[in-house]
Amino acid sequence: MSVAYAHTLGDALAQPLPHGLELLLAWTVDPTFLVPLAVAILYFRGLRAIRREGRGGFARWRPVLLLLGVVLAGVALLSPVDLLADYSFTWHMIQHMLIAQVSVPLILLAAPFLPVIRGLPERFRRVAFIPFARHPEVQRFFRAFTSPIMAFVCYVVALWAWHLPGLYDAALENDFVHYFEHFCFVVTSVQMHWHVVNPYPFRSRMHYLVRAAFLFVITVQNSALGALITFSDDVLYAYARLESFWGLSMMDDQLMGGLLMWVGGGMMHLFVIMAVLIVYAGEEERKEPHHPDFAPPGKSLRTA
Image 1 (cartoon, rainbow, N blue to C red):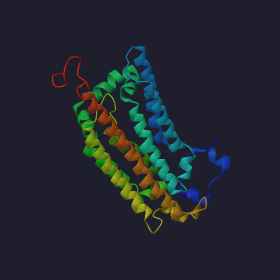
Image 2 (image 1 turned 90 degrees about the vertical axis):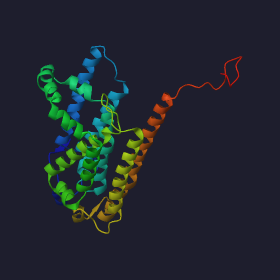
Image 3 (image 1 turned 120 degrees about the vertical axis):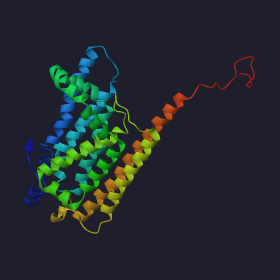
Image 4 (image 1 turned 120 degrees about the horizontal axis):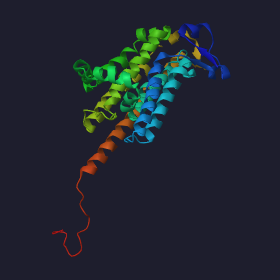
C-alpha cells in the first residue's frame, strides 16, 4: 500500500490520476481522523469498564453504529476518496457528505459521551477532566456551543464559506487548510446533529417539531448552495485547470457534484426529518391513555 502524506491540486496537475490497483492502494494521512479514532478507543475502553461494573444503558447496536461511523470517516479521510477529491468536485462532495451527513450522526447515535469519559485514564479523569468540566466558564461555553442558534449559524457559515472559490481553492492547494476545512465540517456537524439526535445523557433543547423545522431550514440552505453550483455557467473552482475527469469535462463534473449536494444531500436531510417525525409520533402515542375499544361485559359503551 502506498501512503501519500500530502497531495494537493498541484500534484493533480503534475501527474495523471492513478488507475486500477494503484488507485485502490493510494491511501493518505489526515490528522482529522485522529478525532474519531480517539473517540473509538476511549469509547470501547469505557464501555468495557461500564459493563464490568454491571451498569447497563447501552444497547448492543450503539457500538456497531460507532464502528460504522469511524470506518466511514476513515473512508472519507484516508482512502482513495481523498485522492479523487483532488481531481473531482463530485468526489470532493462525496467526501464532505460522508463526513458531515453520515459519519458524525452515526457516532452521536452511539451515545459516546459517558463511555469516552469513563475511558479516560482514571487519574486524568479525576484530577484534570472533572474539575475542568465543572468550571462555570467551561459550562457556559458548552451551553453556548450547543445552543440551536449557535449550531445553525456555525453550520450555515461553514457550509457557504468553504464553498466560496477563494477558500475552496485554498483547501485544494494547501493540505493544512484542507485539514482545517475537514475539522470545521466535523465540529459544525456535531453542533447541528446535537439537536437532531438525543446524544445520551444529553437531550436536545428543541421539541421534535421544532427539530424538524430546524432541519428543513438547514436543508434549504444546502439545496440553495447546490442549485447555485449546478446552474453555474463556469467552473467555479480551481478544477478548471484540469482537462477532464474520467472522460467528463470539469463543467460536467461540477454539474454532477452540484446535483449531488442539491438532490442527494436534500434527500438525506428529508429522510432524517421523517425519522424525527416518526420518533415524535411514537412518543406522543405512548403518552396517550389507553382507551378500550369495547366496553367490559355487562356494561354499555356509555357507562364503560
